[in-house]
Image 1: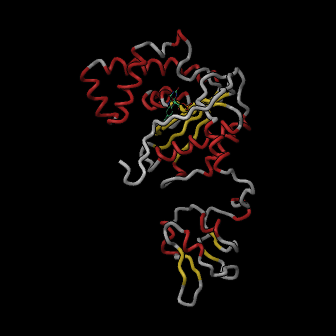
Image 2: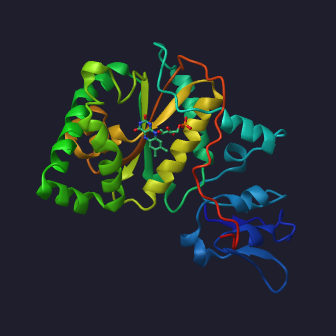
Image 3: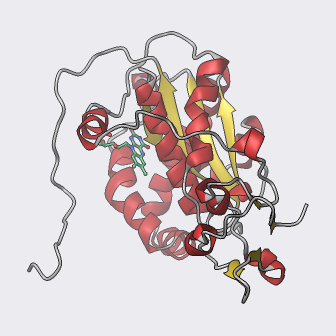
Length: 294
Ligand SMILES: Cc1cc2nc3c(=O)[nH]c(=O)nc-3n(C[C@H](O)[C@H](O)[C@H](O)COP(=O)(O)O)c2cc1C
């Protein structure tokens, strides 16, 4: 059904006109609020018009008042609780030998539906590998890829090509963080799994490599999911090593059933935490500048 306003229900308050980010509503000369049909193709399908309408008079394709909209929660967190929640989260890298039930994974991914997005959110995909055997099968391939990076960094021509191919940001990450660890033998599987840390589950956030905004959207989705992991009493750590390898080793894409043309942005390794942290840490690493402060 086309996007529209039900004139019988509409109270002409005009809230939809105000909140629509692309200005797809207007008031006619006789005060009627209408949907501008010619602008349908720029609708962002955010649903804000439906969420703000006191009369349930707005209809946007893809959303249904019965199925997709619901009353606002009565007790949203206040700032103090929100800060306590965030301060208590840690990147967990020690897991109990306990699988994560499918219904818990579903709860972890539920917040993704509430995440903000740029452009086309339907173009990001999430793949859950809730299977330690498959993860272990992948580890030697990831380590081989990391060893290859070490070799490329030590060869001037390969290093130059890598810098050109990967871009300045990724190259800096490799040069300053990954390569030194590879050289120190940090990822050598003889000393244990320093890559997925024994996690029972891995979740990949990906999208076709040319899909608009998939990098930003996937990172935000992964962050929302990571916070849900914490809210559920489990532990997670973002993992960029496995995605880096998956993106360049076709065998890994196949093993994890990720489409060949997809770019994996980030993954989350997760499970039940082995240890409890006693303290929160306030780090002031990010520089925040207020207005014209120098
Ligand atoms: C984009 C991104 C990528 C990350 N990749 C890894 C990773 O590959 N392996 C890892 O152990 N931790 C990874 N981390 C976790 C950070 O190292 C971690 O957030 C940092 O050590 C701070 O610890 P905290 O999360 O407990 O505050 C990553 C975090 C982010 C945001």
